Image 1 (tube, helix red, strand yellow):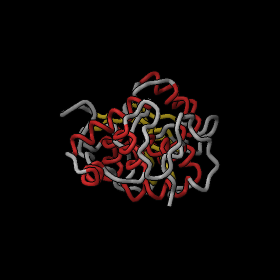
Image 2 (cartoon, one colour):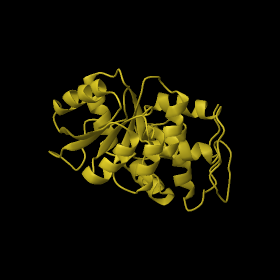
Image 3 (cartoon, rainbow, N blue to C red):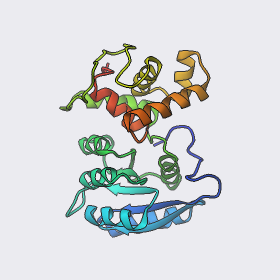
Image 4 (spheres, rainbow, N blue to C red):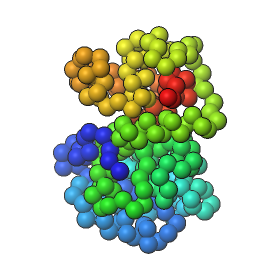
Length: 241
């Protein structure tokens, strides 16, 4: 799976190491990912967890940048563990590991606050790129994948986010504290457009779009573009199809 632009970046600037916690109940998976990641420049494995409960505890103890989180684990599954990690308000980003592409558990994990997902059979390069993308604060969702996710969300029961307005697809009425332009950018993110594509659509510089995206995330209290897409759909700011 490919991520958005900026996959080559690392958290904290040039030379910084991305610290990773691997949470999976299968020892061979943990050891395999650990070997692969430790061999990659700019990445180090800070620790491992055998279940969701231990993952939550080790995030508090080790303060990793990224958590590779298996979904199906004993004691506390990856979805609940993700929810607890995000609710704690730390800086760790969760990257969900799954065997099946876009299964229902992935959607639940994204709603819980995960920043993206990766198939367990990903290559070493894909794994490293995924970790760097998520650590940098970008969403590990290519535009085509974002569109598929939104389409799949339409089949699942959701609780719309509270809002003073509920404009339909393509509407530009300001949403809450967002300006009209920020609302427009949020809708385009949810439709699966990259920053470059949004800039082209709105005929502005890509740097301007990056500023709008940052303001949208801050105003809505969201962690990244993935959460922005989920929020926009659940708030009915965009309608699949």
